[in-house]
Image (cartoon, rainbow, N blue to C red; front, side):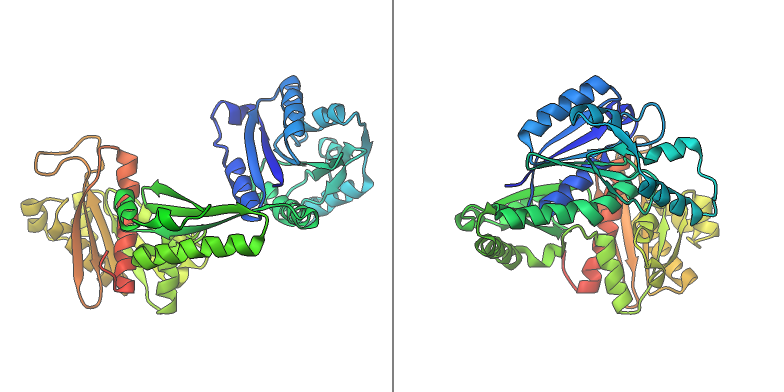
Length: 419
């Protein structure tokens, strides 16, 4: 297996001010092409600690992927450390300077500051990697049949360099060395709890034959990661496919997609194919459902808009929920949820209307309606559906689970599924 280590540099990551999403993204992309990620490390802005960690990872790895510390300020230590590690020296690269000038010119800036010109100072033994979405170039060092890539910590810049240079490099190494590969598939499910899913997949263990299946639950569904390692790519893929076919045969109606696709994406694609639209009315979700739709490019084809009706006044005045309904049944009720979904559909003239109203917590619950009580309603051309959910006592989790349940309700309706 091609062994890859990931080293993230920066005090802000180490102390938790910024979540290390880079490492997660990098690892996922490496594994997708058959590499084995053996370690994630986070080191603060300390030259000594970076150097010691780099030495240790170099002995363990075939490839080290570094992010962070390549900027023009004094706390950017990656280049100085790499100079020491490879016993190298800095040289000025006219080629890199032209890249920097080109980047600024496209943004209407003709003067490059002295500080930014220093980004063209690169280690003599490295290969600079052109960064089209930023100013700091990536750096590639190759020595002793090993490789070290240094990339900026800005996610878009790192992702560009990964796609343009790192992933092709990894793929080439695996192919040229005829190394064993690591293959995996991900099946995304909705509308079924992890324990129920496991029960429905009884007999799975008998056909695994070296394939591993991991259950990865979230508040919006359960992902199934099916993976195997092997020297023969074809045989490994066939072994995985056998397991995938078994799972689909048992719980196919709960599987909405493969890979990293989201339920909102799949629902959006279904709506776009049918030339249908949706609008949302949200109370306790506070815009999360609309945000889930609009996270996806092209969502204007099917998502018309929404109303965050947090107060009863807005539910009544804007959404047209009847005052007597609110007084008699309350804001968190089947009756209110139904009128919210039906009226937002009429208001936006959309094919479907979805509403969420509930008690997210941590306060506001009663014996009859404890914290975590949520009503979700779907208004369609032929009928209106409303369902009560009882989630937990964590406010943010309740909101996220509400969004997942609302998307599942619409997905099930579009696919004519009973889930």
